[in-house]
Image (cartoon, rainbow, N blue to C red; front, side, top):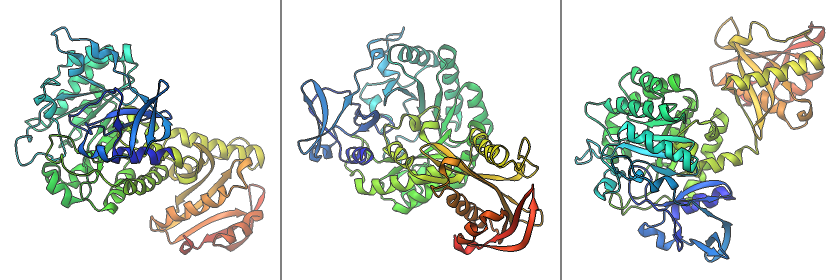
Length: 506
């Protein structure tokens, strides 16, 4: 499986015997280079001490590069060539590569201020390497908005850059980094209309986020790094002091401003955290519409954690598999991100695991207007066109208060059902409008919809879940834990019976 291979090389590294672009220092997962395997970019360690022990290597055979494991050919590997825009300098003679770098397949990124007020203190994040590239004279301390606009326009023109990442160290006074990120975004948008992602500490109030949105920022990264609070206190004391409550407020504000699936948080694996904390933290984020960008810790040479190990690749496989399932259930997807690390995906194998989950049948509540449109069309096809229960539309006053649940497979919605609280009280819910595409009625889609509806209402305190079921489907529902509690009634010209679900069955 390609996803497993990417996981292994991101933990073990790849020995490189041919020329590649290799960044050794910086703010993020810096040490390494990007290779592309079957269309998926993977940023992998290439020069850490542990890489010399890796069974993986890149080899040039008959003019083509290959990923090999213990000498055996695994996959053709495309090595990212040196970006053309690196050959240029700004008008004030600063190399473009000191202003911004190319990441993954088509992302251009810049640390707009290469310093952090906590760098020379005991509050410094121990896994970070933000000022190392400055010390190595590979970058400039501050990138001006004009420089960024010039460089990113050239990256778009020469190297097909299609989205932008802007990050920074912390400023004083707190929050001023957001204002500066906004100025940079505005300058970039004036010369090229690329989607922009900005990363920053959680602000004190939502107005800062509206400021960024008005400036042209499209997506936001507010990174807690770990949900193991003991690990966070030890390795990232500033983030620990900020606290989960303020992070949660910031995530909620950001989703309101930038939208569902357009806010993310890095979660580093391999810092000594409990494995369950990564899964539980990912679900916590996903429940709020925030994408958990799970990344294996990579020791950056020169950082305070340079001698630490990368996480075990088997651990990463388990985590990726679980979290890809969470993303699928919550309706989150890297492919729906407009800009940023999530869209790029090169530092994590999570996107590859997402692709694997598309092959499964998945049930979940809808999360976008487009999904609702498809679900309502399926209902119309079944209840209006096929069964003739309604003349033109099956929509009614209950749709506005309903949660609409779908089953999808390979990114196609196959069926839908709705649930809504009964007016008599929050513990009573009603289900209805179960509709499945005609070609998929033998794929257990209806069963998945009914079971997901039962789980959904039960998790919200429901104790009585009822539905009017067409007489022809009463036996089918009985097999799933429903019982008839009323006589046959004619509803829209067809016989129905009131049934109640046994919620202990889910």
